[in-house]
Length: 375
Ligand code: CUA
Image 1 (cartoon, helix red, strand yellow):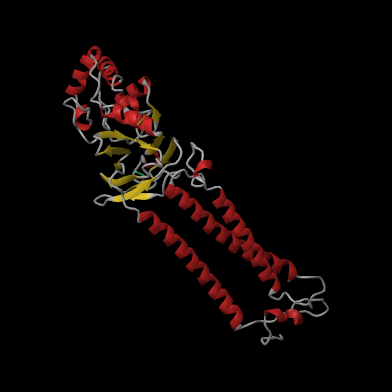
Image 2 (image 1 turned 60 degrees about the vertical axis):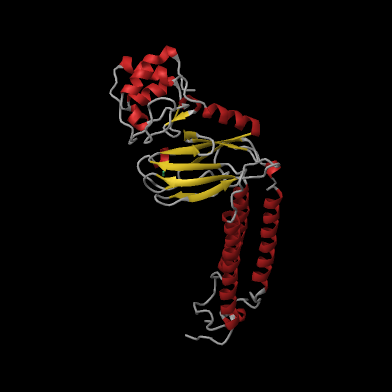
């Protein structure tokens, strides 16, 4: 078998007899492909940047990294488009060359079965396929590092709202240390205020295992690690409801560890704060239920501010009925689901650490009646 090892890639014309292979594949096609793809990538990147203006963002109920509404999330969206564009370009070039080769060098009728010329040791080509990928990796690395350090480098200003979020199996404890508020699973924050311009800082801690705090439209994913404090900040531009969830497998109810973030206009947030700071309601009509609640094991795990109930293992119930879900988002918070939950939470959330309270139907009714007043 005849081998021709002296020719470069562009010199494949001697491969077959009787077939016209004289047109050189050459380097023109890959170069043209690169040029087209780089232009397309540039256009995509510019288009993505053009609609990154916060004014255009709308509240979206489904978590979506491509519909950000808060400063770190805008940066993540832009970086994602940049990286995806480069990857799409690489894919198009590789797939394009592959398709070209498959068509151009396909087997044709009447062709003999000789091997094509074998090419070894082309310095230009080996340099090209080493240097270009290295450059691409360096560009991706530098762009990512720039965004990461830009986001993580921001320090809280003295007037910034500070919130501590503690991951539990399987719910989120939410504390506003400066405001004296403790709630669960439903985070409330003010919208960006151009006069104050202070982002909201979230300090993340875990009570048990590793969780991960992720509300895609507000900020990047951040692990919540036992014995370690992590931090994210958000600066939402559009009021609305944004959903997220635990993004690190943390046990059987990992998927039932949902988050709702309500971004309020300034006045609305102030009203929410005022309502949450109030002590628990003490409705005389449900005194019996309150006394029963305080006589059961409920108070070992739950706090109702202004009463002897001061447990911290489970969610704070002081303003339980201000929350729209139960069990970290697994069901709506209605009188019926609340009753079912207290009767046997495991039915609504299998594996939940809250035990069934083994109450008689009458006792259950009294406790539910009391909890329903905790607005
Ligand atoms: Cu907490 Cu997954």
